[in-house]
Image 1 (cartoon, rainbow, N blue to C red):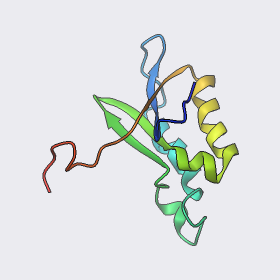
Image 2: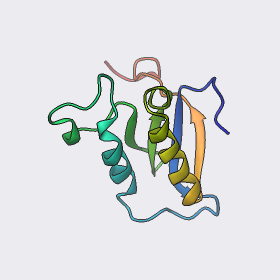
Image 3: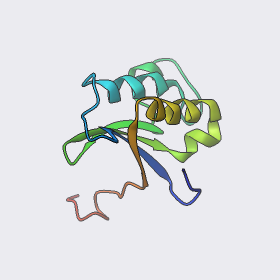
Image 4: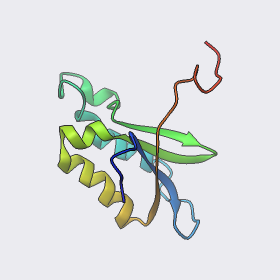
Length: 108
């Protein structure tokens, strides 16, 4: 269940049974499909970059996609598509928020 307090939702490339999800580029594919949903809407060339609301990443060696709650506000059907993708593929989902590198102790 997604609560209103979290800003981001992490769809992890790990099933509830602990198996790595395949294909290995699933995160890039999902983020690519969501690339048109972005602040200000789709524009020429926007399909060539990921939306800031749906970004593939790797956390602790596991591929994931970070879905920002702003996507739900902008296009609820796109948000539902991402959640249903996770559900249909039995993927683990976690609520959290990404911290900027500086706040996380990263270098400038």
